[in-house]
Image (tube, rainbow, N blue to C red; front, side, top):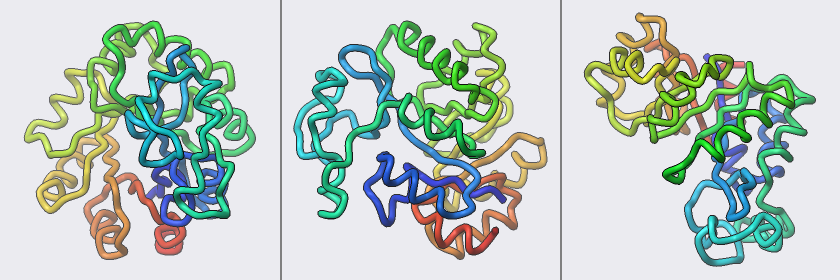
Length: 239
């Protein structure tokens, strides 16, 4: 079973920073999960929240800042003083690092603007330029993004739909929106669906698995990958 580091090594480093990705890669993880949104001037950056208040020393909506303005904020000291000076990384900064390793990039597209195509297209082209399209999985809660990608013949990217709750006809829905995989929040209810989905051959990736008991249960139920805040513990179980 694959182990994917959720926003990097989130238990021990500030999420969605280069420090977090570098730390996660010291363990035998299979992939890195991160979140992408766009700045005021259209630069794809790695950040989870819509506002920067929780994980930087700044305040306000991320999309109200240019990339240059965002780089002035500290994205590390909120977690621990030793991470002071960490910046919000651009997606390109992460791609530059990833082209030198073997990891899969699991890229969640956060809530996109209404006309997301003008931002998404150059972002996907950037990933392709770095030679990473075939080991990138694009996921999102905003499923029209996935349908658009399929219709525009961007078949070289794997596409996964994100859901917080299980869907009774999950496979049928995945086919309808042309998704290749299901990424689902782990819960007791979701577990009932894992074997059926896995039997169909569609990859099932469960998030966020941080307890050994839950990880072992996922393995027994043929989950393809677990997405975890604690890659240290999870890789010790399965690698």
